[in-house]
Image (cartoon, rainbow over the protein chains, first blue to last red):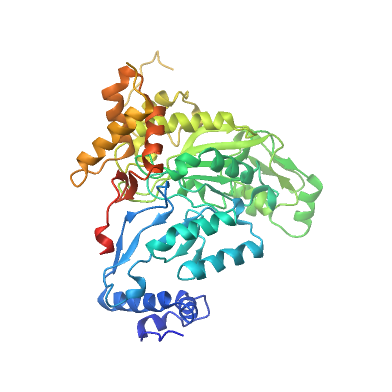
Length: 392
Length: 81
């Protein structure tokens, strides 16, 4: 067992009843000298209030341009075991379903080839393997391929597509998120492994408007399950909720953002044309209400975390599309978006920022989409636009 | 005479080599330059994409990351020293 460095500041983070990454790294340090040095450098960073990582450069294995995040210590003499500490992003299975056997195999490979430290999962959804040396990248890749895992995306490429568990576990899923994720992952292998974009591009698939993967805030293209007919209602079950004490007026009707519901104490009525698909009523009365039967997805484009511009949410570009294999219509739209963005986008400009710069009208024109009312997020704010009487 | 993929590979490699140490080139920079130079001779986006794939798969060039993804000649990284 490696001698652990003295880490009084990190030790504070072991206190409390919640999980502690320091506790986990200390456990790993019993076997891994890399983990021990990691503790030492981190304690030094906490003391000096300076990060000691150098980042960038190397990005992949032979033929790949993503999936490896090069990281080096700027104190290699003091912490020699982490002089190289590259991260590997591994493409996760859709919906994050594993057998325990698969997880053991991944951990065995990483204990042999790297620090043994993992992050399950990173923000993009990948399996994150933390800390290895340059000479171990190719052997790790080879070992992972032997158990049918591949490297994920990083840099200016398509990031590893990810989704909620969808129809595998959730009754609200309006389309098969896992099937679409798998299909897009396989179809866009070149874009995933060979960075050719102005900056990163993320897909996230959510089965219903509850959006458990927060696709509307975390992906450039959010594909959110939705229905276009009427909410299915079991009137007897609604009455049962009321009989058991639920205040349907207060808890359901008054909280409807579309004001599409009425409750007279006996019967619930829904004006479906006003429904905003917020899922609130369905979440509150899951036995009584269900999404409609005519299901598909709404496509939204443009969200991102703050870097050049501030944080942005996706906005609607296709209000409803039936999502069925082979998904040709959605692939055609994605290709059109990428063509325009790659041609005209600036370096490190996300597609949402690009749309903001060129204007939604010009962007829609370029990708061949007709503007529709659902794309309007809110009424015009500029009070100095006047219409003539003859204009509609 | 129409350009072949191999011609584009060589032209791209020359461009990357000449820019090494002075300017980092993105795949789209190479694509746009090739189409501007040889667009009239049958070079299009798909041929450029295939040429970049060939450059990388052969090991003559590698992808690097410095706030964005670039294509460079393989070299010893300064950060690794």
